[in-house]
Length: 223
Image: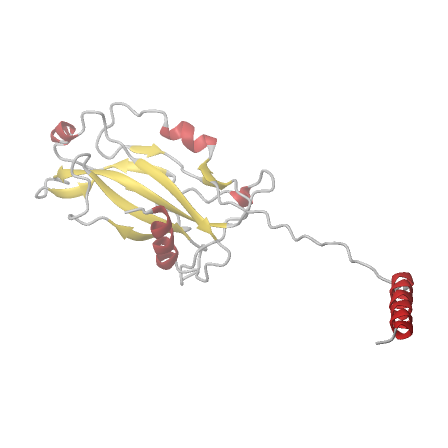
């Protein structure tokens, strides 16, 4: 290549670079949008009235004694929930009205129509040490023959809509023929234990109490 052509080529390249450096284009950039997902929660507790009632011992009970006793749960979480309770009821070999002795719950209850029993312990699962039978109840729609779960609303202030109906309103000590024979198994008294459970009501795709309880047990590793 001749010197003249080399010089011309160099000039052309320099001009291209200068022109390219002066080119201007309209440009823009959209603002970044961030979608925030805040976790909800399910949180329940017994009402203060329930805690007070269960925290007060009843002394010197007699056969057929009826004791007023209520038990309500509140939804204090950020999400709607389905509610369950486990009632552990003392049992003993007891003779009722002189009949042959057999294992029985020592108290009967007037379970509310909003609560459906979905499971109870058999002899193979009973708590032998504490002499307790276990009963599982689900909170359901009152008057609904299909017994579908009732949704307890998420908490946004005080109000009855955040509380369940009372599980029962009274308990009755059985008409034991020989109540003195019962006390040998219960040195610390006859204890009715109640435990509340909740599972999210949204996105579990069931209102069947047994199915929802199965999901809940799996998550809590509850026996």
